[in-house]
Amino acid sequence: MKNRSLVSINDYSKEEMLHILELAKAFEANPRQKILKDFVIASLFFEPSTRTRLSFESAINQLGGRVIGFSDSSSSSTSKGESLRDTIQTVSLYSDLIVMRHPLEGSARFASEIAPVPIINAGDGANQHPTQCLLDMYSIMKTQGTLDNLDIAFVGDLKFGRTVHSLVIALSLFKNTNFHLVSPVELKLPSSIKKFIVDAGLKYHQYTDIQEVINKVDILYMTRIQRERFSDAMEYERVKNSYVLKADMLSNTKEKLKILHPLPRVNEITEDVDSNKKAYYFQQAKNGVFVREALLASILGVI
Ligand code: CP
Image (cartoon, rainbow, N blue to C red; front, side):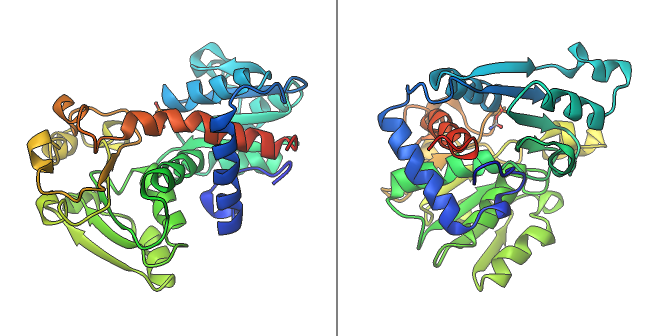
């Protein structure tokens, strides 16, 4: 993986994904090692972020590296009309690796084709979020002990949810994954992503009612309805409250169920769920540091 960009989760083989999860486990046991002290990493966020940006920056700091960049592109020369090409070419002169989030689908691939340094895609529009995918896989492995033979429900905005797209593609590589796709009709998982399931010989089932699946799954992956991706505000208003998970809905769920959510949440999980032992979304966010340490160390070739 040394010097290779990570743009889409399918840039990695199953073995490479599992290798990152193994490394993440080692970083969780020993997260503070000064192995990146000779490196400068650029963090370019053209779209808002809390977890992805700060967990990357925490990972870099804990490994002794230096971070440059911006969290708001209005403070960069993008606001003066500079192209993404020129920004990436320039930042490559100042850094050894670029972590980038951008609202345009395909922007990370474009950046990776012109940059002389590796690019890590921290989310490109509604397309992909591969580092979130790896931390989701790590969280599933940690809580279920396996990535095989799992029933997983994805709930909410499956059309625009880039974390869902990446995770469905990755889990299609594992044995007997049974996909339960719960969404409003307008926000179904795109056919281009369902094709990965079908091509792998696996099954998916589509629902509009969360009650049809909640008691039979091992992982309940809740997502936010993504207001910022809607061109029609009325359409968003119509679907925004489609799914609200409350603590009393968990009483007949599997003992080993874990609730994941890439966060941020709006109203799709009420706060009374947070204290339930099946809620795992804040630990999931914490796992992001270890997985991102593993990725940085691996791509920069220090382990
Ligand atoms: N999960 C995730 O991408 O969160 P942020 O938007 O806060 O980075």
